[in-house]
Image (cartoon, rainbow over all chains, first blue to last red; front, side, top):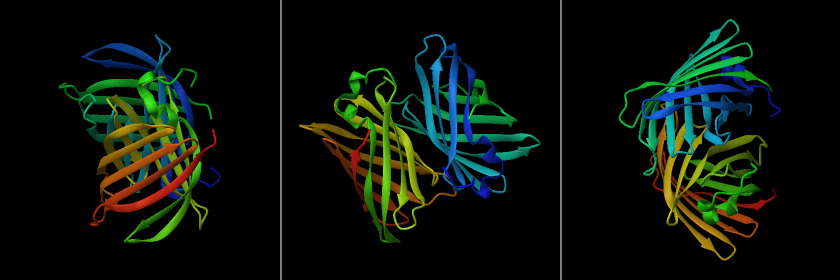
Length: 160
Length: 160
């Protein structure tokens, strides 16, 4: 987009761009897996970012996960995230963004809603850190009767 | 994507591509408006489509609405849609897809969930018809205390 990032984005403007790298997934009900990920944050001159990501399974090289949604700056260091997954889930998340000397730190907790055919996921927590050109995140998930616990960790680098 | 569309997509595969055109919005609580819209349906070889759209207000020429999510083929003419809006809404929709001689007809009804700062939208209904290279849709919405009623109508043409 041509417009400058909206000033209310504050430190979230540091996310704008394309990031890629690798991550690992674990959960008691599945085999561990490794993935390659591509993440895009774009803006339209408004106080939100459009977010989307896709992953490829490193073992099979086939498309694995995807997510798309919007990250909303709502003032006083508060952030909201709304997100859809092709697995039939949506997330409505609230949390905080803190500016760091060379980046930011985001913490978000989601309520999850789903279609009748989707797997039962009940809560998701995200912890995202950006330092310079590196973005790291951890995702915890409560699903299929398991308590909230570590699920994903990845390290991405900005390339656009 | 390189893969062929997943066979379970059935008539939904007709949506794959980029569409653009114009639409009109009405609601008792706002002034009528006209918009230009761009819609993309893409696939990754799986039985869902990634969907996103953006609109520009025809009067101000500024970005207006956006949506992103996934349309899932779940068998027997049933379809699910999960969707996020930058206004802080998510939709979880169910409905039907019917094949037409030269296209398809989709009917979807959404439950809506939202962040604390989002406007109160409680239900959305979508009726989408594709005939050849033309996609028409109507959206009805229940919001801010108003009953479910006509909100949007648009006509788009495929250009990719």
